[in-house]
Image (cartoon, rainbow, N blue to C red):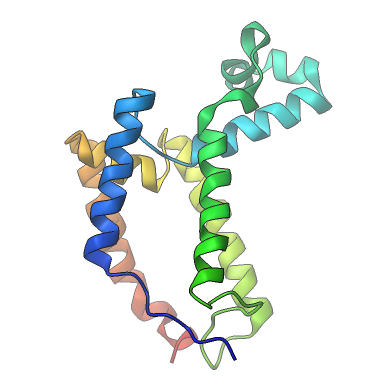
Length: 171
């Protein structure tokens, strides 16, 4: 029997995340985020599948111009590290399992569809906003960007506004 360890102290985890952000600024010269990794991976896929289309598209050209390989970006390896770190952390804490977290009234398929739909919507919106939640909130917030602070407030306000609408999923 695997004994589950308690979750990390949120204050200690917050300090650790702040130190990671500070290290990213000191070593790489800019903050952290995830949407850039997804965008560069998609650009690499489009360039491999349809090079003429990638070259004709201004968005993809930002990632592929001058013979650059979009997968050379350190941010891609940051995101791979996030997945590896999450897996190792869950394994060490005895929380590695093949389950879908859901409320008693929600079906697994329904939960997966809502999660996938929300992820696609957030991914699309992050590219429109020129940064994902982590980039906007963590990096922009640390730089005291007014737009990032407005974004964070809007995310929390939207969460509180929508929570009553989806509460039945979890009760």
